[in-house]
Image (cartoon, rainbow, N blue to C red):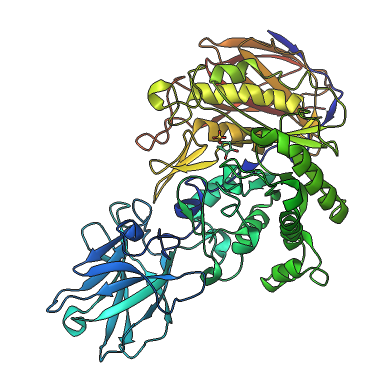
Length: 624
Ligand SMILES: O=S(=O)(O)O[C@H]1C[C@H](O)[C@@H](O)[C@@H]1CO
């Protein structure tokens, strides 16, 4: 195949083209969010049930979740009640086992915090032993703190647990025990327990470093939040509400997330915005738009309070503290300046409720545009169906399909009318090899982890996104992140467990495209729409780098001849190559089976390149 490249750019590549889509889908609590304990505040549990004690276990004692008579806060009505059996002699107490474990590193300071009180005054004078222990009960770090049975009001304990050795596994736990003989017969209540590792950029209440770093390494330009389904709620009452996710953790009640578990909302709007700032990306923020996933569309005459809530949510991000109470809250939380914000998404996947979206879109966007004329509002129904007013300037398009579909639809946007509308490929991934059952189980073709074949298919599709980046302004793989086993969806771009993050073939493809960006597109000979070899050529004006991305989805190598129009071509190019067994993946058992390999290649005004079978290649060289 011969590829002639033009020296004249057809259009700029928008700086927003590559970014990340995030929602809590076994990815926030217990994942990116730094809190290492699960069920830390017994939010939304039913006291007295075993389920209320999820992630907790008794150590030679009796524990139960109780509805406190004097809750630690209005938002957190429950507490863990420790009853020390009479005659106890060994350390008795309880432990939290994290998200199928707690990753503990050597020589690291962990910040523990909890509240306690004696519901009935007692003569107890003793100590709590707060510790990190490995699976065998070996103490990895511990601190003692004096406690008195006269403490009948809530008292917060904050302390640092410093490790020295690296435990042998992630099966570690956070424990609080009391010396048994002096505590026999005692009853003590505990609330809002928390254990944090060092966080990304040391943010208070911030992100887990290893996952955060893997995400930051992709150099994403945007972060879509807070969903996705998890924006919507199964009911109107359980929708995501920005104002319930800010301020002191004691004041955050948590909510029934849309993926089957309670969200602590410890990862809230301020944490999201600080995270975007720390990584250098801009939020693409969604506002709830009157539809709950259980099927409820609010009638038009009931929208006003929710429109106001959306106005306040946006003011929290960009408003003037002198004019908006919500903006004043942002200032009070330490960020008087507005955060950057260009795009606000109105709802999520409203093709599920297209009929009501006609008025929901109209009423939300009419009001929001009046308040924030500088913002762009992204529609989430099918493009131009139904017809919406005001006419959307952007649409969010989602597709989950097979690797083959992605390879054969890289021209998806070539045929779109250039009428000023722009597109956000907000969720896309090759998730199944079974075209007749995309969302089925693994036994029906669903992928557990991305494969080389799925990543190559996505890369082929992404060459089309670059070619059409005159109308595609943003794109993000979804879901971004998921626990290896405690998950609601596979595959995910990154998988993790309590102590590791696992980078997939698709992660490397997303990173290769995002890190090796150009700022203008150079037209070239078009690939065959349903061929096996796909490419895109971009130029970075600042560095005069030419960057050629190639995906070969065939099981045989493909020979390419590039004919370049430049006067000067620096013959020494760099090749970044990702390739390997088509149906294989990086897995927890073999996490580095795939990784891009960098080497130097010879290029010239005309040069040949053989794309290996099932491979993604990035060729970079200077030319002018
Ligand atoms: O069940 S789906 O609708 O396919 O869910 C998808 C689409 C939705 O926006 C997102 O939350 C989820 C997985 O990324």
